[in-house]
Each structure stands twice: as structure tokens, then as C-alpha cells.
Image (cartoon, rainbow, N blue to C red; front, side, top):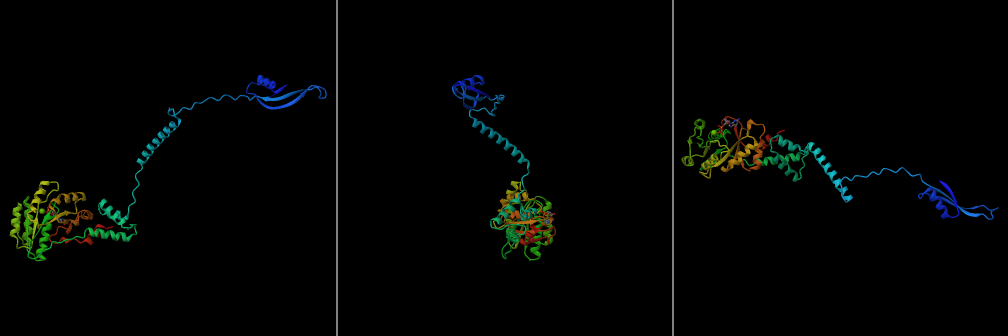
Length: 361
Ligand SMILES: Nc1nc2c(ncn2[C@@H]2O[C@H](COP(=O)(O)OP(=O)(O)O)[C@@H](O)[C@H]2O)c(=O)[nH]1
Ligand SMILES: [Mg+2]
């Protein structure tokens, strides 16, 4: 800072500029009188206080490097943000991929159904029906459980026994895969109709593939005291049916067919088309896995079975498969067999009993 005196402002400014340079700042000015005697003859002057800022160290200029060269800075920023978001999304996806999906909330009824081999889709459909009708299925929802029991019962409700009409001959054929219990079931039914009901019965077998199969049925026929006819062709079946018009009931045994063999199935179909009044029962073992049973039902549908007959209920603790099938194929249910004993281990299906077997805790 420095004080200058000059005759005029212009002169003072010139001095300041000369000594302190162009960047000097004027801090203060005041008029003064100089010389003279007792204030006479003095000259008017100007006192100027000026200063110059000590120049700060020049800062190094840092040139910011744009992330992406672009003529438009806002575009650059947008692109950068988009890139960053893309990376974040990828990271998030990777993390989420590693986290196991949270289990869906399951109802206790759903668990109970699936524990008893009710197919997932069937269980879901049954429960969704309940929900859409306004039933909640909390653990204490006794009402929902009751409704569900009724629904299951309804699936199994259509039970039809073999009805004998006096004066007519009823012919019942049993079809299904090998070893499910067709021949044994025929023996049980024939014995019951003869011994308990005093009906006139004849047996016909089209299972001529193995001698042992014929012998097996011949043994039963002899014990029960009924005739046995062996047929090889549809015409022979027609002939046997004609010969036994005096009987109340004819039971037709057939060879076990593989659901995978189209030729065998077509042959069986031709045999059953002999007479439109033949009542056909598809025999299914409860030891068969649901998926296989589903395949069997689909393949044997070419023979148009009117009824399902379930065997070997004694050999499994879960009979959910029975419900799965009847839920999808609204076919009548006839008998269930519960063991190897002829003639005792057979009974007419009882929906209440079956539901309690299906929904056991
Ligand atoms: N545990 C059990 N075994 C059965 C039942 N029905 C039939 N069987 C047995 O299953 C096997 C095959 O029976 P079979 O009548 O020859 O079957 P098919 O080939 O269908 O005629 C035999 O050993 C039968 O004793 C049943 O309800 N329960
Ligand atoms: Mg057999």
C-alpha cells in the first residue's frame, strides 16, 4: 500500500499506474492544501492511497477428461449414466441369480394333499377352486377342509357295481397291463356272484398268450364250478357269448397289454368291438406310479373303458393316484381289491373310506 500526492486525479493515477502497475486499486482519496503561510497562498493537492494485491501463485490448470468424447456435454453425461446403470443391473442380476427363490407360501391343506400323492396340478386346481369360492384355508379353517373333503368325495362319487338284470346276459371284460390282477379279480367276482348271489356265471378267456394264464383261470373255474371258454378271435368271442345266453354274467379275461404296443391295443379293441354291450373295466394297480398310470389310461382309452377298477390297494399307503385319475377322467369307479385272497379281498368302492385313506395325516 502506498500514499501518493498529486495536483490532480489524472496525475495521481498516472503515478500509481507507473509505480504499482495496472492492477493497483485505489483505497482512499482526500483533498489536501500544501505550502503557503497560515493557509494563504497554499496549493490544492490530492492524496491517494493505493495498493496492489500480492499476486497469488497461479493454480495449475487441471483439464477434466470427459468420460466419453462427445460434442454435446449433456449427451456425454447421459451415456455415462446409462453405462453405469447397465453395469449395476448386471451385478444385481448376478446377485439375484445366486439367491434361492423364496418358497411360495403353502397352505397346510396343499401340503397334506401332496403328502398323499395328489398331483401338484390337481391339488392346485382343487385349492384354487376353494379360494375362488371364497374359502380361506388357514390351519384352523375347518370349513375349507370340510369343503375339500366333499370335493374329493365328489371325484370318487360315481361308483357303479356290476348290475345283473334277470333275463339278460351281462358281459363284462377286464383289460389292463400284465400283472395288475385281472384274472384274480375275475375269480373273486365270479366266486362272489355264484356263491353269495347264486348267479349263473361263465368265464371266457382271450388270454391265450401263455398256457399258464389259461390254466390259472381254469383252476378258478373248476373250484367255483363254472364253465370256461377259450377264444382266439372276435368271432370266437361272439360264438361263446351266443352259447352262454342262459347265463346271468359272462366275465371276459384278456391278455395283459403294454400301453406302448399299439398293435396289441388295436387287437384288443377289435375283440371288444365284437359286441357294443360289453361292459369294459380298466384294471389299474395302485402300485403303479401316477405318470405311468396316466399313460396307461390314455393308451387304453382306445378300448373305451366305462369303469376303473383299482387293485392292490393293500400294497400301498398312498392312493392319491386314484383321485388324480378320477379327477381328470370322469369315469365310474367299480371295485377295489385289497389282497390276494380269492374271493374275499374285493369290495365295492366306498368314497368316504377312500377319501379318509387319501387324506390321512
Ligand atoms: N397284494 C395284492 N396282490 C394282488 C391283488 N390282486 C392280484 N394280486 C396278485 O397279483 C399277481 C398278478 O395277478 P393276476 O391276476 O395274474 O394279474 P393279471 O396278469 O392282470 O391277470 C398275482 O400274484 C395276484 O395274486 C391285490 O388286490 N393285492
Ligand atoms: Mg391274467
